[in-house]
Amino acid sequence: MLIDQIFFDDSFIGKGWHDEEKTLSELYGELSYRWMPSGEFASIEVDIPAKTNSVIFCSILSVVDKNILKVLKVKAGNICCDFCFSDSHPFGLGSLLEIFVPSSITSINTITFFVPFSVYPSKADKRALAMAFYELKVQLAAPENINKFLTVWER
Image (cartoon, rainbow, N blue to C red):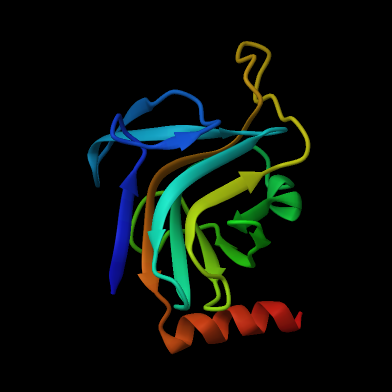
């Protein structure tokens, strides 16, 4: 069940993100996205019901450096969350980052992302970038989603 859906366009509410950019996509037409900075925090306001297992599906247009995924930290409130990353997005464009928010975390309305080092994609672009997000969906976690994260924890 869909709880919240966020697009990274001019209606976006968050802190620390770069300004909205646009690209053309066969699947979406004009697609708005925002870069998450590297070396800094970026947060987003979300609706997650208290005491529910939830999954946040982040649609990623681009990742500057795959090593970012080894050090990426994601927090729901003040609690670190586990996540899975897939190079191919099953329903969209780019990659998919899935974040598990367990029911033990209560009253969450902020998700914070952090990469502890700076990555500069080119000499021409002076911004420290990590990943370009274009959509975020919050859903109640189905049992198969919970099992996927349990498999990740066992590694």
